[in-house]
Structure formats: structure tokens, C-alpha cells
Amino acid sequence: MIALSREPIDPVSCSQGVRNRRIGGIVTFLGVVRDDEILSMELESYEEAAIQELERIRDETESAFAIESLDIIHRIGKLNIGDPIVLIVVGAAHRKEAFRACEYVIDRIKETVPIWKREETKNGSRWVPGEHT
Image 1 (cartoon, rainbow, N blue to C red):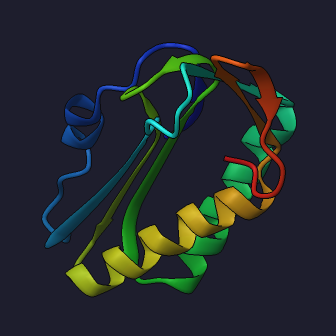
Image 2: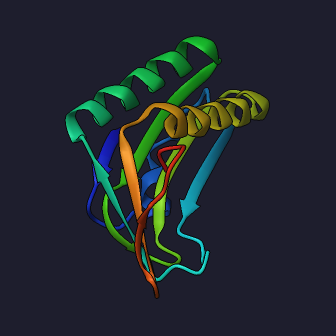
């Protein structure tokens, strides 16, 4: 599954469908909003381009790593401290490939997916420069 969501991410239900007989390791990465002296954040996206880029990242990852499955769900909209931002679930025959693939995916998301972050602070709002999320 590749998705952008305005609804909360449920990591447990999302990782349930990953199991099959060839998978020996499932690596799940859940990125959450941390308290960097912000009140909340807003994630905006060019949704069509973001989905296409996430699909491209999935295809790259499946070609580069020996994995059986890859799901990516990224939130957009308003988020509060502790809310999940992104969920990556990788299934592979062996744990090392699953870990390597998962790290590759989050790095690529931050580099290339058109999602922008605006943080709300007690002093107003600010757009976060640099990496996308």
C-alpha cells in the first residue's frame, strides 16, 4: 500500500497484512511529531506528485533490496505532538535486508517527496527549510 492520509495512522493494523511464508523479518518505522518547542505542525503536499514519487521509491527499493513487501503511509494535514507522520513496513526473508530497505525508504522520502512542513510555535508559524519531512 502506498498512501497519503488525512486520518490517523494505526501501525498495528497496517502491519497485519505483511505476513506470508517467505517473510522472516518485518521492520516497521513510525515517524512521530516530536516536541521541538512546537505546538503542532501542518503537512502540505502536491498529492498526485507525492503518490507518484512514493510509488517510484517503492519500485526502486524492490529492485535494490531482496524484500517481499513494502507499505508506505504518510500523513498530511494538521498534526500534534506525538501523532504519527509516516509509517513504513518492510517484509523480507531476512532482517538485514528489511532494515536496510526501510532506512533507504525514509531517506528517499525526505529527499524527494513533495511534502512540506509548517510548524506552529508560541511565536507564530514557520516553514521548515531543507528536507521535506
